[in-house]
Image 1 (cartoon, rainbow, N blue to C red):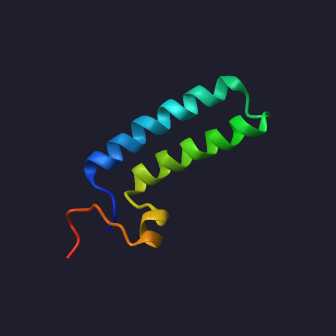
Image 2: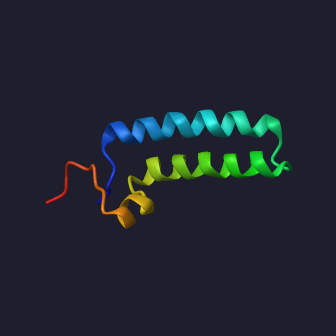
Length: 67
């Protein structure tokens, strides 16, 4: 069971792809772009598994399947 809605998953996936693809040519050896690439990968991961731990910690759930 996830805590992300379908729209939020699509937005996270698209934004994650954009961020990762923008940070890769800039070089992961640069500290700033390294962390930006990791943030994009986190967005892609949360979109894929339908769960965001930060949303869980904040008590926020956008999923329609909650009781």
